[in-house]
Length: 407
Image 1 (cartoon, one colour):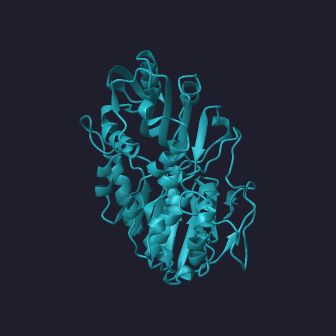
Image 2 (tube, rainbow, N blue to C red):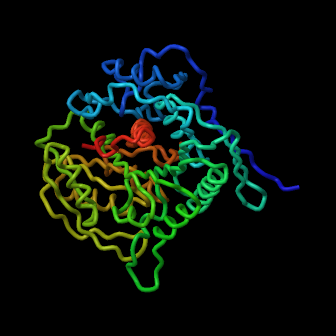
C-alpha cells in the first residue's frame, strides 16, 4: 500500500480556526494595515461579504518581537482608500470566489483570507511514497472564480509541480476562471541567455502554467519585467515596495540623511523608483562583476554615501553575497548606517551568517516566502504582503483597476 502524507487545508497550529461572526468586528484590516479611521470603508465592504474573526494577534510578531504589519503615517496612506468607488458596496459575488492554498506558504494564505473575510476552500493534497503529488478539491468550483495561492519557492520543483496539479484539478472541475497567485516566482532569474546553449527556464515555467489551464497569473516583484511577456495569459504584477516604504516612513530617519543604493547595475530602475517615493532621495550604485553563479565581487561605488543612512534595495536576497559585499563597501565609503530591503527572502546558506555579521542596522523582508524560525536573527524584520495581495485579488475579481493601488 502506498504511503502518503495528508496536508491539511487549514494553517498550522499557530493560527486558530476561523469562525463566522454575524457582526462587523470593531477593528478592520485596511489595505496595508489596520486603522480605525477607515471603519466606514471596512463596514461598507464587509457588510455584504462574509465576516470572520480570529484570535491571531494584531499585528503578528515573531521571535524577535518585531511586527510583520507596519504602522503607516497618515501621509503615506494609499489614495484609493479615499476614492468614491471604493467607498461603495460592490456586487455580491463572494459565493463565486474560491481561495485555495497550496502547501508552500499556508500562513500567508490564511492572512490573505482573513483580510478578505473569506475562508480558505477545502483541498486535499497528498504526497505518495514515491514523491508523486495528489490533489483533490473538497468542494465544487463549477463556474467559480478560483485563486490558487502557491509560491514556487524552495523546494522550487516540488512546489511548482504542486501548483500545476492544482491548476489541472480546477480546470477539470469546470472552474470558470483560474488565477495562479504566485507570491514568489521561481526560475525568474533564468529569464535570458547569458551564455551559449543555456535554457530560458522562466519561459518554460510560464508555458507549463499556461498549458496546465491557468487563465491569469498574479505575481509579486518579478526579477525582471520581461518575464511578464513570457506568459500568453494576463499577468498582474504586484509591487511590494509600498509595504516596505510604509515601514520606513514610520522610522525616524531624516530624508536629508537618506541615500538609496542599488546593489548592482541591473537594479538601478528599481532603486530609482524606490528613491523617488522617498522624497526623491539621492541614488548610489554598487558596481560589481559576477565571476560565477552565486559568487559576486564588488568593484566600486558610484555616488556619495559619506555620513548617510544607506538603504539597499533589491528584489531578493539569496546567498546575500551581493548585498553583504555592497554593505561592506558602503561602510568603507563612510556610510553611517546600512539597511537592506528586499521582497523575497530566499536565504540560501550562508545568507544568515552574512546578514547577521553586523554590517546591517536592519534587514527588512516580506513573507512572500515562508519565514523559518531557524533563519531569524536580531536585525531581521518581516513585513506581511497579505493585505496587498488580498486587495489585489478583490480588484481582479471585481474587474477593477489594479495599477491604481501603486500610484
